[in-house]
Image (cartoon, rainbow, N blue to C red; front, side):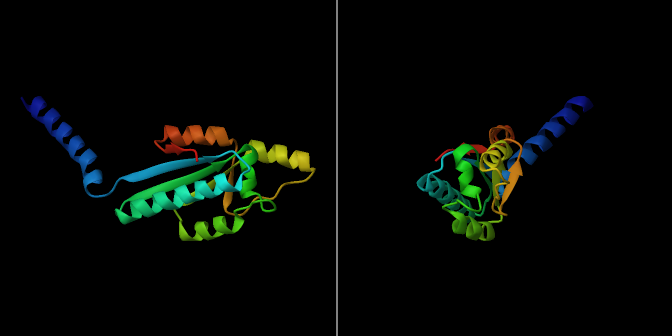
Length: 148
């Protein structure tokens, strides 16, 4: 009987712990946004998605973590010399501390080799070994996947 009561108590505590965060607004939403095109319209749409998601959850009093991952031709989004959305990334980075930018190291290495020099990325972008692998890791951690 004691074992049954103990098991029931543990199950009840586990259920209570699972329900409390969603009731108390403690859940954290996680979103990965993917850019692989050197297209200003697509880049702006990705940034609009990030802003709109952030605004939505802020209005509900809920937290959201957003990571924008760029690789292939999309890496131009984070290039210091070619980004068509550079000023927007700079301002959003300051306005939204919950938004991070991940740049594909594989693409960066290939772009640098082709350019014959190290391609400089914006300071807001952090280098990850592989953009595709980063998206896989984020999805495995429960991030929703968005591709504008």
